[in-house]
Amino acid sequence: MSGASTTCPLSSALLALLPGAGVRSRKATGWHSATFAGERVTVLLGLEGEQRHERAAHFAQALPETEFSLRRQLVADIVVSEISDSEDALLLTVEALLLDE
Image 1 (spheres, helix red, strand yellow):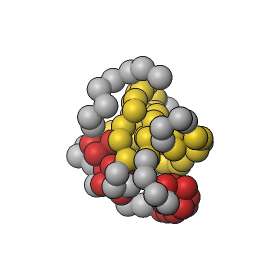
Image 2 (cartoon, helix red, strand yellow; image 1 turned 180 degrees about the horizontal axis):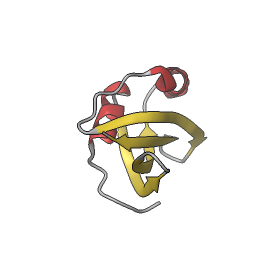
Image 3 (cartoon, helix red, strand yellow; image 1 turned 45 degrees about the horizontal axis):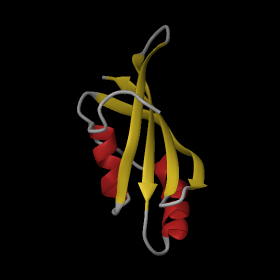
Image 4 (spheres, one colour; image 1 turned 135 degrees about the vertical axis):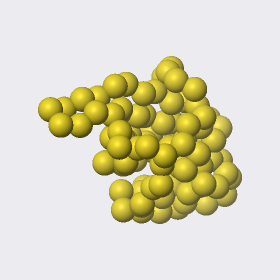
């Protein structure tokens, strides 16, 4: 997955919620409806260490109810859409819809 820089307010917020994780990639595409504008963001997180499966499951369950404070953007929808094992880490795909304020 390629795309924009891996440092963004959403990525930083996700890393704060899941200590020990790292951003593997981030992709953002513009999104528009009749009344709103924003972007769809996909962030691939890598999580290493002990209890990573339990930590990932807790993170995935709590994420949709999490309140985010992002400058000039509202998180309209966010979910962990996939969790998979790689050779060196557990990979979590986070998909979000961000609306411009």
